[in-house]
Length: 282
Image (cartoon, rainbow, N blue to C red; front, side):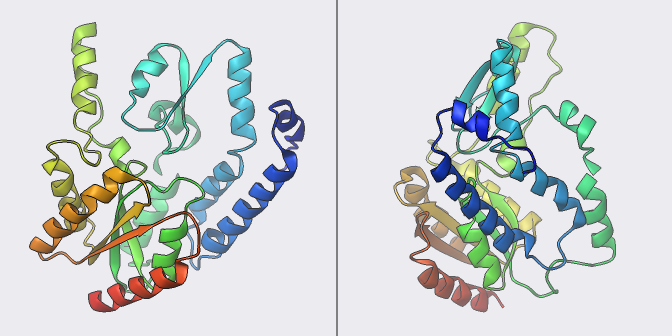
């Protein structure tokens, strides 16, 4: 970050020494895992800049909104209706899993075709980040909030290619968008309710939709196997991991069930399991 935000961080009461250590670790991890990728699309540079500003410019923007009298609301789940927050003249901030943003406003700065055009051209040229025949993996389960890049790093370092993510920080937040054709407040509220009732988080009862969604994503992404990932003590995804595994195996879909935490202590063991799984897929 070129701008010095230390004064702002001090005013927020942050431990600057600890925060510097965190930023150093995040920056080093991001460089090692993502910026070092071979044949990385040039269009990803925009997202590199955005991520580099999450502790700086974005926080400054939120403070300016607060100073102007706007409320800032934090949430832990995509199940929180952002439309209602925005309608109340407030800003919704994801505290863990991320948040959606108004697409019309975003596209004024970042046209939806900034990265898509490049990827479409790559598809026409049959130019991928990995050679043909690389095992294609669908990641399912717990969200991977920043800086939890452990599993993607292990999978791709082992020679796999992640082609989809079924979690509440993946495509789930952008699926089944709100029907805005209603003409009355009651119709619009009902549309909101219908949209959020279609979100199939883990352990919703009954929850056949999530199982069917994983199968469909597996098919649509032409994946070779599924890795179901659970964080220790995230009981909903841990409890549902066995039914997911059994349902996939009943359909002949290879599945590896993994339970881990944020540390790298089990990285060696996980790498061995993932490498063995990828070898089976080959």
